[in-house]
Length: 362
Image (cartoon, rainbow, N blue to C red):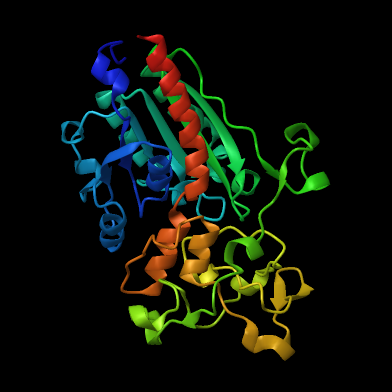
């Protein structure tokens, strides 16, 4: 793969290209770990302003990945990104590799083949490991292996790494065979005690982070304007601290949507209609299978978590500002992102391995 070469290679900051970047949660996590995100690609025009505002030093390509030629991407040490996941979702149609969006994984492989970075990281939903898709998944892994990468994959639950949220996602990390090792996923650091598999956890672990820790210090949020348009900057107490208004569908009411203050959040999804309820509301009442109701006496207290509250749960800092013309796009950007702090955990281990490799080739 990459030549074991010069003094400049050993001293430089590791450079990264981000594919399917979204608003850049994964990118920010890598940046926090000391990587330089020099180039990114995102095709969704509703995201461009947010990405450019929060990553001003990164060149943003706005083409479809299908139209991006590999020589347009600068020389980098790593490629990161999460190809669109709807095709692999257990909640969706599960078309997988038969869906044009699923085939975008092969565009990711094409760029790796051409750029030959030292490492890559790809993220996707848990459904990619389902029985319906496992053969396609192993074909994707074989594609990585055939290009000279030693790969490791794992399904991680973000709450076990200090993220205040139940969120299971699959991560694939590959190292060039030049590095001479396989990525080892960091051990979990947080647990909910005897409810967790004993073989994974130790007594030294920290408790799962709660909604109280994540959003308890925020002032009251404000509702979005008519047609779920955003408020003016001076109308929200904290940037993006507004919530989607409107009714709750029968699908929404088919299960519990409320967690208590001392619990982690439900998964933050890429849509405001299904955002979790704020923990200050009363408990929902189960009527029967797939049928829940709000407590009539406290019905006015039920609201969706705000865009900023969801961003806090995804461990975005408050100075990461989401730009949108409709509140739904704010929720979409937040929910599609990799939790920033989880990205930092993985990036820090990758950086350590790269530093060890650089010392070895001196």
